[in-house]
Length: 250
Image 1 (tube, rainbow, N blue to C red):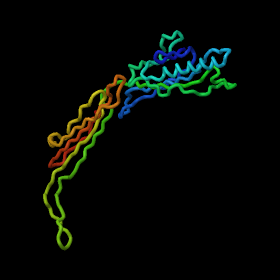
Image 2: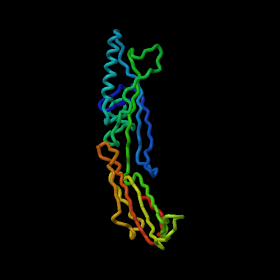
Image 3: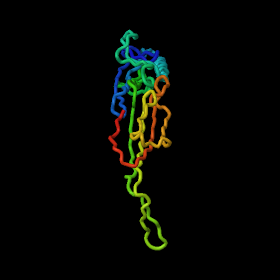
Image 4: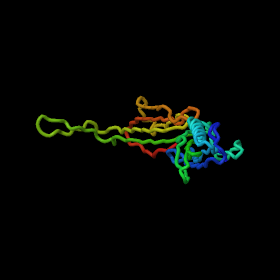
């Protein structure tokens, strides 16, 4: 089997591949994609030469070529059949991933399971880690909201200070209004999401409504944002207590 990254192809059976996959969840614990991590472990070997210096020079050149190939991100990668052109199930097309294929660990060298200390005589053991995300779906990534109630419609009173003696309690109003402040925020995928309406629209102070659009975040492979945060705040006021039945998440 042959592993390829971009136009660079490892020798047949030069390396092994470990494929690890883990789920990406939104704030509702719904699956929105998968993170793939490819760990390549192999041994770069060059043919023996009667001149050890020539052998080591050839090995150095082969390692430098591999390092150069893995110095760039956003290239296709995968495991191919020995013909070098037929892909297996373990391939990643960078353009189809979210953010592209990234070289998380360029060629890193380790001592192999050899006896006789033959590392760098005509071979060098290495490992490489590649990572990419594949995301699916759209809609909401996250949402939260709350309603704050201030007051209960009761008497408004104050203590009036006196020059001598304790302050006196004075009623200023026999009844008062009840304030409702509804606040929330949401994150939409691919676009700003629609915000929910006020829970008590007939009592909203329209002049106090606030909407805040944060800058989009999380670029995909094409350089377009994925996450669009937005927040809202409504202020409502009523003379009687209003029945609140709870929020319905989108």
